[in-house]
Length: 331
Length: 128
Image (cartoon, rainbow over all chains, first blue to last red; front, side):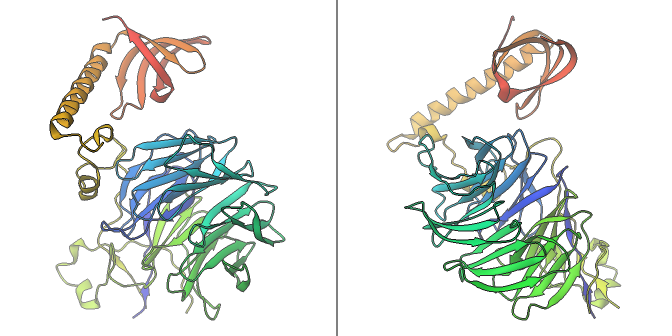
């Protein structure tokens, strides 16, 4: 019997959720941080969506948020012209890095020693978190606001996407451009998968996959609607995407076939990411919520419970809820 | 005919009264050093750490007592951008992020009720 996807809704934000990121898998599970225009990024337990804490301090919309692998540090990028580094265990603000314009993107190196920032002043900055008072290394070249800047190739290179319709690969030491991709329209999102060196880029209705080292295109897939964000499953069997039509789409990566689509959000989907174990994906929307979706619908994981038909009518099932979603699954 | 996947419960939402990061959670207890970062130099012994803890507790207690003493008194706040305002202090929130004040005297008039953002305050003074 087919099971229908029951997304878990995480409420708490009061304005659109514009970015989200997972940590790596830690001895305490994995974690999720969400960036919101209400200026209050939140930390949640990754597999249940349970709220852990809110990072308080920004004075403007938070456009970007990230966690280090161990989920001990968080970084946020905001419209108050600062990037902040936080202790993700206590919730305390550890560092404020002043910028000259809105900051959009933050990213830690693997060892959490350096922070990459990018934003509307078109400059990529590298901060040494062991020497925060020192001037950051600056990388110039983009001619429009930077949307996303990510470390790649073991933190020796940097990938950046900007409103100048380019994606650029930079060498960290020489700060020179190694390679550049140009598009007809602005790139809406970028995801870097270190294992396999894959770059996922979205623009218009297209989800494009590139080799992150050579920037050679692997394949492109078109969705039914304008896509704001996409994420590739760790096993590289499927990818998910969401955008303007409020739906989440699941595609087969090998065949490019659209497998399923889910309704649930009440606004455009701004960001979507697979969890580090691939068992679920999280989406953030204009409607102010985050939703968690199962990769294998019906499997027991996190708060989802696989219930056999006999159990549904038993007398002991009073702790089991059925939350209605409004799913639309393609046969 | 498909059935909805069942869930054990819904994700827990934010606590309206605080910012979270429960100090009793297993992760906090395991990862947060019991000593303050200032005293983690090598060679610091437990006696010194104990003394520092005592000093910190005493300072924290007197700070909290000043907040109590300030209640309903006229307080002068020195803030950034050379702002000096005076108001009747009401209360602080649990994380000392906002002060609730009444009759806030500002250059553009008196605000009957207001919240002052603590991170904007440099210093404040009042008569006991």
